Amino acid sequence: MSLPKAVIFDLDGTLIHSAPDLRFALNRLLAQGGRRELSLEEVIGMIGDGVPKLVERGFAATGVVPESDALAERVEVFGRDYEVNATAHTKLFPGALGVLEALREANVLMGMCTNKPVQATREILKEFEVETFFTAVVGGDTLGGIRKPDPRHLQAVLDDLNVSSRDAVMVGDSANDIAVAKNANVKAIAVTFGYCHGPVAELDADAVIDYFDHLLPALDALV
Image 1 (cartoon, rainbow, N blue to C red):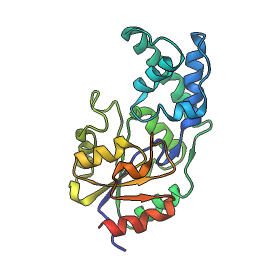
Image 2 (cartoon, rainbow, N blue to C red):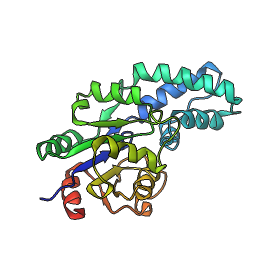
Image 3 (cartoon, rainbow, N blue to C red):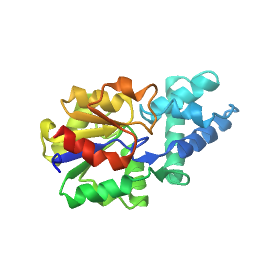
Image 4 (cartoon, helix red, strand yellow):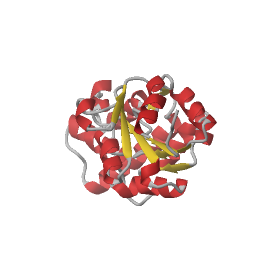
């Protein structure tokens, strides 16, 4: 089996099913202002563009969005709450750990490219005992507001791994993941079990998989 030098993963909706904890944290924030609760399906539709956008969408769905300064404060409150509760109901997707182990056994470098804040990302990886798999972790707040689909986000991961775009593959679940890969000239694999805001087939990824057990063959076919 041929594998790339590096595989870069998205986090939410790709490696972890985090929507339940994001929902609980967002609803706790909204309840402070007397807002209604959001359903899991509603929150899943808001995930993918980082915490500030998630919080903004939560307020927009339940009433008036606060002014910028007040919204920024709400984002900070959400972040502090979520960071200490980020793994209460979150789980690795089935097969994820086995894939990480197989890639490490094959000496494939692994990186993380996520719009989630980097500290929360590292805490989650540590909680699930998978932080040692990742040589590079770049979050949504690592580069001063540069996030997927900006190619500089993914390029920062490639630079940390010291690999070229042609030697890496991005694995994600959303339009941002596939777009950042295309913008950085990296091949992309989309998973169907995540938080895509539309048909995964329309993302125009280089390959689509339904289960993590299919990832290694898909990587082999792309190399």
